[in-house]
Image 1 (cartoon, rainbow, N blue to C red):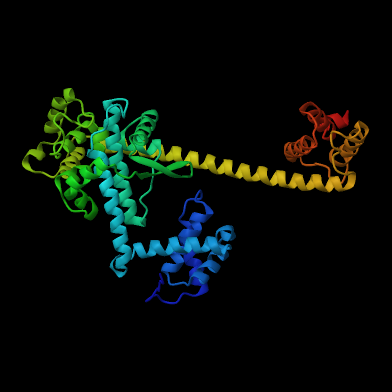
Image 2: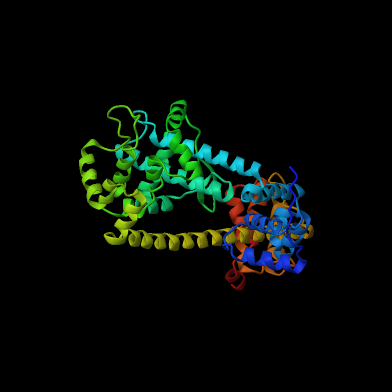
Length: 437
């Protein structure tokens, strides 16, 4: 497909550089160079730059983009994704892209409805509570996927135990069990990991689930196009804080309201909602949401309840702040670990170069099958070159662990036992206090 960008004023090199600096400056420091490069490429193309101009500008702004942009194949891959993103967000100007995005929304909506409403097979989940939590969770993930398709064309969503626990007011272990239950039910599959967080996609429907999705085609259509429909209206409220953070309602109330809109379930099937709790749930709904009896829309009734009688929004807000703080700490730790791995890699690479330079002076390590005297002579020479005052002395104390690792690998490759390797390392690279003594 040939893409032509029109009606865009020509940018100077300085203007493009400034625009990219502003766009990239808004990104989180933990964003990977590849993701940053993609964001910058989308911005540059949207401003009317040619791919070549965008590539040069991005390399000027951040040399770290070289790994993603210098390779023609990698750049071509990024360019396809960037163009698809621009096409998909351009509305009616690109009807083919808009149609493809609507098709993805239709697929996600059908999977959401099919998984949510189809009864689970016996023994598929550990308990009714787990089943109920799984149905709430698949609805949350499905709505997130629909939003993701609308925003960026992607139907795979990032979801951690912490995020799911925030939406449903669950502990981390219970949220983890719920995600595991979704996998066991075959409703979601893990497609990637981004920054330590799993990315999930709703799974393909079984024949039975596919039939259910056809039965509830009106609901699917409402979810795709955003118009009102009784079941779709209930589905869209699943993340309202009144259900997860208000004791008077709980997610059982949402589940019951959803069940009321289903007219094709087998007799006695309640999709995880216990029969004994139905009476209590009905009374809670009648007390908390009296406007429903008069035809008040569910979303409006929930907003009125939280505004006048509930602290649910504030409780969820506090937990969200706490989760955000923990996420920032986790990301900082992840970044520190990455930096430490990179530092260790650089140390080992330097020490390998240092060791090879020393071998040019004293020769390579004799194999274990050589006369012992040759090995002892090499150790004596190595102690001088690497440990005392040779040109290849490991002077930086921080490099000593990496050099010991490199030396140990070389001695092991030569066929020496672990005991001899340990003794040889201690002799060649003595501690500073040993030399003073």
